Image (cartoon, rainbow, N blue to C red):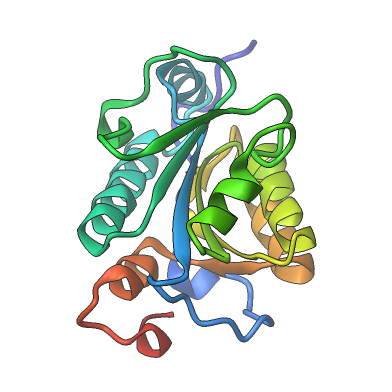
Length: 197
């Protein structure tokens, strides 16, 4: 593996996001937060590639806190059992942790049935890796009649190109692309969902 640039790529800003064609409104009573692959070993890999790790963890941590405050279920997906999570998003009491066998968090896991049991049909997706795991999880959510929302500044990959590709592909095919600010506002019971996203 070759070290990346000494300058990290920049997280997308709201003005850089692809247009939403879904017409969906994020509703905290329908949503679950899905955190993908934010284990320390993956974070270290991104640091070597000069990805925007500080922003990723800050925004993902903010989403986890907002979800807990609002009573939105938080589900973590990891590729191996027992791996240490980044401190900012470490699972808390009541969070679910699933072991993913494939790139999609839905493949060979109980994620779909868990969401159905929780009566949640919207999935807010944060974490790694945008071009593969995030993209495939969003597509699988859509195939299963769920509404995926990918949080553009709370996902990352090893390059800006991979990150941008994932956001554009999701927006074009299967989901909504949003921002941490918008999701945090939607999770706040004082802010109507239609105004937040």
